[in-house]
Length: 302
Image (cartoon, rainbow, N blue to C red; front, side, top):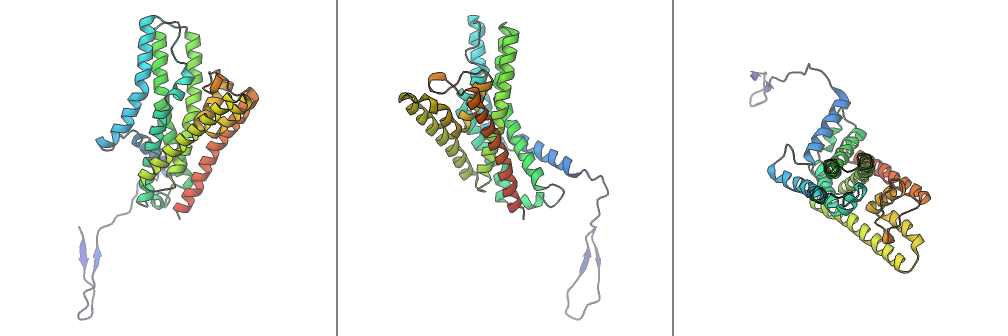
């Protein structure tokens, strides 16, 4: 209870000193690692609207269902027809569903960072004990984890369905493992690109539009140029053109090293030598995204 302590004052002076009862905190100090883990957990939950309003849950949960329903249908068809294999390879599924993946990253990357920028709460995170790199790692890891859940869940549906259909265990396990590697790489790449674009503006709508524009325009331009190169008989340039779009980068890596069928014109992906370039560019983009985010938030946190 506040205790008012009168202070001698001059006539007409209304100054008062109030003891409002603040007490110091004597509990444990959990430090940076705990704060970073808490930020990661909160950001991951927020990527699916958990702990937020019902309205915030609608889009991410709907996109999650849309990602899984085609896989369930494919499994049902394979079981009903007693097929010898699944209609789609594990590594191809994310490429086919890239529109849903792009929409998810466009909606959730701005949600992850735009509110902190808009309400200028970023400096509060950095007051103590979290540092810039901790904040970026937590946000990056949370969005990449959310992306991995989105892209790996339908692969798990395919895998379980394949085992129920009594398809070859060794082949299905190998394909499932290759698919997980592919979507893990895709999740890191898309999360980095999405967060870099979203961190430029505090307005969520602008961030959504910018992410969709970058992912859609880059893929459309690359696909068009590849089709032109294939029509003109200059197929050797198709692989190099694929370096300029995130989804074709992942396609090139998995077709070069994971035994996947390429979505490039003619179905011919990069060679192993060209695949090395794809891996270097992909990992370089992931590292560059992290570095740009750290630099960006060092300025914001000042």
